[in-house]
Length: 133
Image 1 (cartoon, helix red, strand yellow):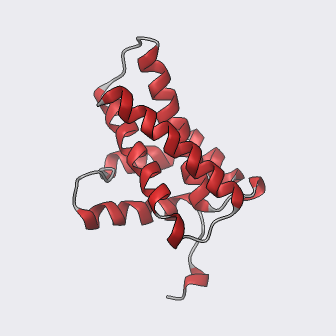
Image 2: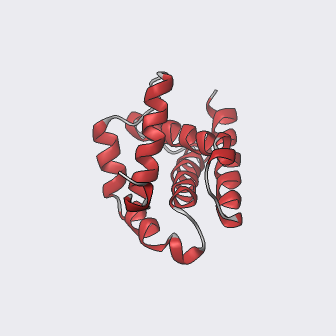
């Protein structure tokens, strides 16, 4: 299929990242339950509906989502709140997505705003790693 027929939504960006994680084989891809959970959340749907109007591509939208998920979970940890193992695992995997996007900048067609979102999500992912490693 030609690339111009592909949907440019956040789910396609997430699937792209999932495939990359499967290819490198480190087990950092979301399992099917997590994937469905993430794509069904109101946050995901809200960002998916708004990313274009904010000057972002689907990858910038995914970076925005990653920064929200990881940032909120990190905030809860720093405040001493208990988080479930599944939320911890989700935040960890979303942090790897943020880092993957940061490492893929050269191969993606991105806007300046995408770059800002990706750098922001990368900074939050690094804070996550510093806090949880």
